[in-house]
Amino acid sequence: MDIAQQQELQKQWLEIQRGITETVNSENEEVSITFNGFVEIISLKIKPDLELDKIEELLTTTLNKGIKSVSQKAQNTFLLFQKQHGIH
Image (cartoon, rainbow, N blue to C red):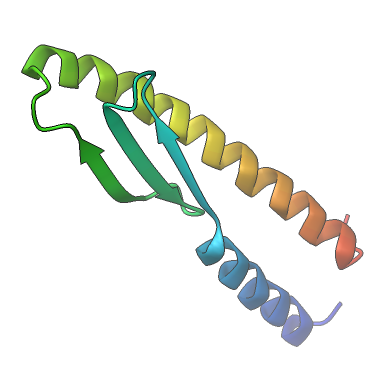
């Protein structure tokens, strides 16, 4: 594979990664966080009547859950991308 082909595949992968999203919610949906394929937060919603100490607890668990989830989704998508393009 030459450099131009590698650059094209990298460009394609970045476009796919931009399209990956994953939304996770706390147990009672008091906190909702949406991540993109770069593991960046693109949306954060917190119920307005939630107590401050509860927010900290729910943010921590929901953020960790989301990071794991979107990372796994991106990894699975990348493995499929590799397979489709014959990359080992």
